[in-house]
Length: 517
Image: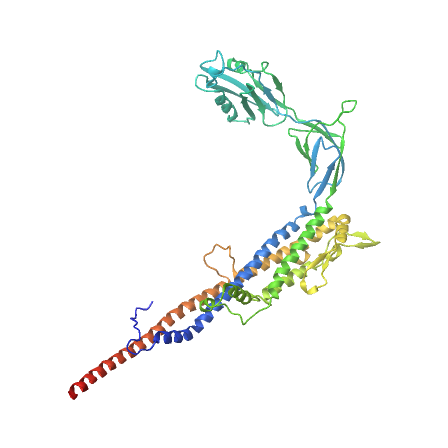
């Protein structure tokens, strides 16, 4: 800021403040042009970054289309849904199977008898008649061939039954695993012990003063249930597992109950059917094409957007003369068409368009349609073709043709999208497109940077241009300050000269007036 003393035109009567303002407005024209150029660059940067966000979302969709699991989805049915629910993974083979459950997996448990507790349950000593001092209880768990035993000692004069429960539940053995959980139901006045895992095994409680008083010692409890493995039959072959969830040949069974038995007490098998999920594959491909269309439409809208070159970014002075609505309308036109005919965007559209129309060599399979073999080596062979408006680069789906291809040649359709090869022109459509999108995003990033970039320095092409303008604007600010100070010095000098002339004139008038007397 200038330290120059500025005075008004008291001597001359000239409004030189407004004169200097007019002169400075003319001097500021180049700086205003730089500010407008900077604003246009920022708008272009925003447009590029918006497109990169669109491409990033599209890339996520393309990534899913690269995966074989997208095309290997299966649907399953089980005739008797009371014994199990069934799901099939991508590795499951389509076909019909039999499944029967002889018995479910269960965990071991002990249900104690009614204790007959006293009303005061503040400590074990007050709750249990005849119990005092330190008492111990020994609990063993055998689970799938491994046994863990521990003795829990507690001061019954100061600890309650809930302290004992917590000790059992929080016990961590030095070796092996402890899967016993205890609980006490005050309303039922019973202690429960249960294994948190199913499988062959049992829980035992040694006879003793405390165990007998709690009515959970072996032989003195209400019920004792041993754990058991699930036993089931898949295609007539018997299997067992410690859990009620099991996977065989890519098919996962969640066992819910035992099968009905025949006259010989054998589990009656039910039918499980696994089919390729044509609906899911058709839906995935259709959604992919929809996403592709919306992406190229977003790019095309910017590529062919009309440019209003006569509408430049508004200056602060211009904004002050317009209403908010007028400012919005003006700005909308000023921002329009900033990426019109942009070479980066046109290159992106051209590349993805070529990819979507490309032939994928080496796709095996094919299917017969009306006596002719159809090889699924390009999108057009599975019902995905360009629209009537060829220039739009958008595609349309013939769902009947797509469904026929997925049903009759699922391997070929999968290979069309997912075929992997070291050479770009040998890859499947999805792999090529994923490469195209990544390359496009890199080009836009190099051009405009990223709003989510945490680097303090924007080294993109536009970022460097903006920094260059900022440097030039800083130079202009210094230069304009010097020019303005020069104007004020000149007007100040003129004001002082006029003031001196006025003083001399007044002196002369005084002298002439004195001589006449």
